[in-house]
Amino acid sequence: MKLFLKTLVLSLILLLISLHAQPQPYVILISFDGFRWDYVDRGITPNFDFIKDNGVSAKSLQPCFPSKTFPNHLSIITGMYPENHGIISNGFIDYTTGRYFTMSDTIEVRDARWYRGEAFWETAERQGIITASYFWPGSEVTDNERHPTYFYNYEHSRPYKNRVDGIIEWLKLPYEKRPHFITSYFDAADTYGHKYGPNSEEINQTIAGLDSILGYYFQKLKEIEMLDSTNIIVVTDHGMTEISANKVINIEQLLNGFKYERGDSGPFMLIEPAEGELEKIYKKLKDAENHFKVYKRGDVPTFYHYSNNPLISNLVIIAENGWGVETNKSIENFRKYGNKGNHGYDNYWMDMHGIFYAIGPAFKENYQVGTINNIDIYPLLCKIFNLVPNQLIDGNLERINNVFEARRIRSI
Ligand code: AMP
Ligand code: ZN
Ligand code: ZN
Image 1 (tube, rainbow, N blue to C red):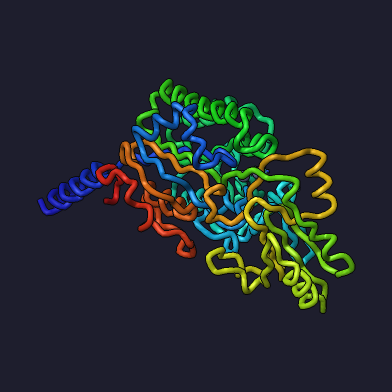
Image 2: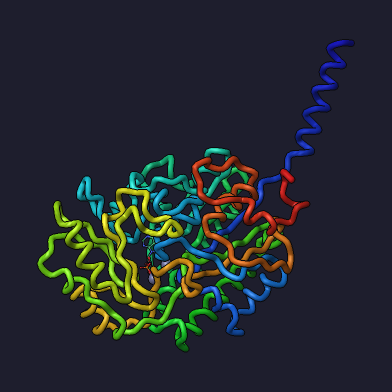
């Protein structure tokens, strides 16, 4: 009799647990590189309007400094400032080893040692969620413990619809193999923003094309009956501003005769003076400070969060908004290719801001918020999946959790 009662109680407990356990949510995180916050106000984005009416939209998404592609995709996916996740630019030198990280060098891009933050797919996989990436900076590291279960090595020209189709194939896998968190990435707004500028007819066509990719997502998810159960979050790494070949300062010419190494150009430049040259170079730049600012690494204004990492060079030059700190070569290229747009500037400048649009069961409907920080997206993802976040993040859930549809988030 006693044994019977024990078994009955145990069965009841198990039944209650299984009733309480809910299926894991689905999230597709889409990045439209360089899609500025106000592109959605041009009357050419019906699918963004659909999300606005039926989901959450922010006035803008603030990137971290520098407002460049790799640093900010890593900030979005780790919840950390670039000084803490370690990808401090699209290209930089580790002066202690002489190694050079650049996004076009697949060996370095796939070397996990550069990536000091914990990507959301790592957090999720460690806690039992299968993840996938149809492109995202940092997703193709060779270290098996650090990449999503499914991923593709970056291929710039892979047709956009193929990317969506590939994601739909993942979602059609048997439940025990199916990913619940998927990233995807589209470069077009960045590529054409650089080439033609943010105010061109060409960028408007691109914006409309990306909006229709969003529509294609909706259509394909509907076909597999997953539109209502999937959370779609659309973000940008940074915005875009118009630039002019007349607004340039030739730093190489200015520092002629000094010994130093250099990284980046345009919105900012990293200067690593040779031994004994620091004070001389700093003075030379400081005396010439016009349309740019020069800082010693430790003196970069705290609001940039761009000091606390030895990968950041001893001197950092930040151009005035819209200006360029350049080299002979970069000025020559500028004149030759006639680029019309750029980014990388002060991350508080609205031209550098991107978008945050989200729709799905986790989110409120027709809910508009102000500016969101991109480092808060990682804790938002953790909350949707009810996961314990990495404790070292800079992001803060408190700043963003008003976007949730309270009834539908499991732990609330
Ligand atoms: P940016 O110089 O900051 O404008 O960088 C934009 C470029 O980053 C795009 O044109 C892409 O080709 C490149 N990119 C984006 N994602 C990746 C990736 N996962 N691996 C390598 N390059 C990438
Ligand atoms: Zn970018
Ligand atoms: Zn770009």
